[in-house]
Structures are given as structure tokens and as C-alpha cells.
Length: 481
Image 1: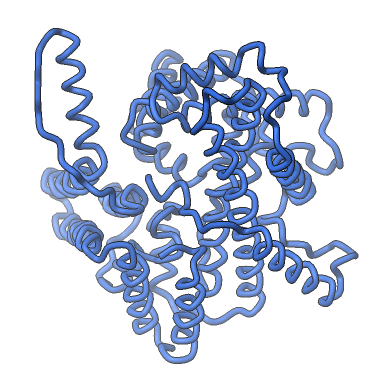
Image 2: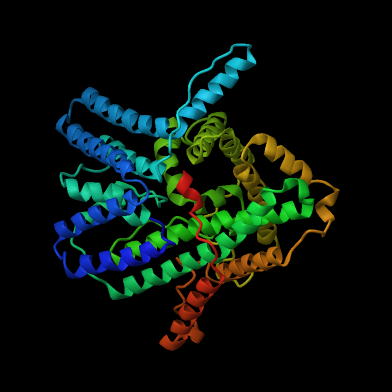
């Protein structure tokens, strides 16, 4: 079920009303969440429910067994390893089987060895990477004694399948979301209203900016031969905003939706395009995935508490795996390695780790901050070309056409392109003024919005713009991951 579908517009209020007015006891509320989540997920293909049930059951059982074998570290390690192998095995089969087979065949072919191994026509289950990582974090944390296992099977299954963030995150740690499943929740009007505002902003970003950019970007990528270098540059800019507004739009809808039911999800984006270097960008982009790889891959490898050469190697490994997580194609791996390459100078020269918001307490950034943001944005922007390319040959073709004499050829530019660039510029302007808020529509403190009438007028205008400009319903980009 898509957030941006008529079905969801009926589904959400029905679940909301049942949740607060019918199923008032905690256990019944969790059961409702579980059933609603399975309906939400099974709307695509009910057969995929078996996978999420297996993942949930194995992770739940592993937690109990690890607790039962307390003091017998070998058995605990075996249980934890078995759960990791099972869940990563499911992920590997459904997401990476054909990729590994094709890659191995190509490698052997390079040495003159013919290998004609069969591949399978496997449909990728929506959101499998997200809920698999969420389940793995639970069993690993239980094994590491960071959390205690739960015996409430309904709460646990609801934690794994919580429908607002099930298919595209945020990837929640058990230490954050599971305790919220286990305690009584009461309706908070102010939090619920803020959730609706955040959902409205998420829908605005997705349906107007992301989908509008997608129309232009797809048209240019599908006609590279007929596109000038300047058109390709416009495509890189618009895809940079498409993927941001598409993914952060989903996160805003998910976080806002969770607030309606009394849950606080982890912030997944913090104005990443105002970052002053690539390190800061990855602190602000897909925050929960970055935190997952940091905790469960980077730290076990030694993190930054080792030689500089080993820190660089650890960083390369993490970004390579992060790239592969995004998709079963070498372009994603190369995209991850490209980001690692951008990181290496920051490690070598021990660049500043920015933890504050740019131009904190000031209206405008300094010249140095502006230049740093611009350079970082362009580096990330070029990386998105590799991310978007269907294969490496197309990336090379795109790049060669981009950096050609036609880069200064204005022929082919359309009003649609110019209009979408204006929408993106407006997004940046609004986010700049709201860069220290959780989301743009937290407008408390502005005199113009001091009265409820002015706020309602703004919300009505945004709703009108969504219905007026929204085109054909498009799925979210990160559903494929």
C-alpha cells in the first residue's frame, strides 16, 4: 500500500479511530498495529508476509535463547550467528542471488571459463533490506547485552512490522521503538497535530517536487542521444532533489504518521544539502542507516581507534557494503566507493567534525561556509549520477556527454525544467530558514503564523497545490531497496 494512494487515505483514519476509541488496552492496540501492518504490507503481495513472519519469529526466538544460555557464551554466539545467517541468507537470495551469479559468470568468462549457471526470476520483496536490518539489530543488541529480550511476542512482531516505517525506514533500533511498544500510550493532541503537519510537508515534497523532478529526469535519461550537456546537468540537479525529497518525504510521512499513534521515530534527515563536507553530509542523510553500519560494521572492524590506514580501510568497507545495500548492481558498489574516496582526505587531514547547524544564530552563512556547502553539494550531485545510471557503460556515456561543448548549449531547455528548478530553489530557501527545526512546518515563533487562521490558510494552500500539481502516482524510490 502506497502512502500516496487513495487506499491509504481510507486505511489510516480507520486504523486511527479503532486504535484510540475501540482498542484502548495496550495489548489490543499492539495487536491492531500488527494486523494493520500486515494488511498494509500484504497489499502488494500477501506471499511476502511469510518472509517477514520468518524474520520476526527467528529474531524473537534468538533473543530468548540467548537469554536462556546466559553464561554459555559459545551457545549464545551460535544462536546469534544462526539468526544472522538465516536473515542475511533470505536477503541474499531475494535481492542478490542473480547479481552474484552474473558477476561470478562474468569473472570466470574473463579467464576464458564458460559458466552457464541458471538464474531465477525473483520478485524483490518491498522493504526487505529495512526490516531485515531492524530485526538483526535486536538480536545483536541482545547478544551484546545492550538490551534485554522481550517475551511479548505481539509487541515484538509489531516492532518489526510497524507500518509507518516498515518499507522505507527509518530503520529503528530496538532500544528506541520496542520500549514504546511495551508501555501504555495516551493521546496527545499537540503531538498528533504536529504529526499531521509533518505528513503534509512529506506529501508536499513527494507529490510536487520529487514526482515533478522524476518526470523531467526520466525523460532526459531515456533520451541521452538527444540531450545537450546542459540538459544533462539539469537532470543531475533535479535528480539530486528528486531522491532527497522522495526519500525524506517518505520519512516525514512515516514519522508524522507514527506520532498519530503515540510513537516517536528517529529523525532520518537533517537538511543534508547544507553540509560543509561529506562527513557532515552522512551525518545528515539517511541517518538511521548510517548509524546501523557504524554500530554493526564500522565499530566491530575497529572503528577509528586504530591506525590511520586501518581507519581508511574500515571506511571503504562500510561504504562498499552501504552501496551494495542500496541495490544488487556494481553501480551501487562503485557509488559507495566513490563516497569512500571523498572521505579519505577528510580522514588523512583530520578535517573538522561538524556537529552544529551551519550559520547557527545567523541569517546567512559566511563566505567560507557557503563555498564549503557548494563544493560538497556538487561532489554529492555527481555521485548521484552513478547512483541513477542503470549500468556503468551508461554512466560513462552520460558523463562524456555532460562534460562536452554542449554544456553551454541552451537549446532543449523547457519551461518544465525551469519550473522544477524554481521549486527546488524554493525548497532550499524554506529549509534554510527552518534548518534548526525538526521539519519545515514547525512554524511556531513566526508572527505571521501566530493566529490559527493564518496557519490553516497555509495548510489549505499546500493541500490545494498538492492536488493541483500532483500528476500520476509514482512509487517511492527507496521501495526498491
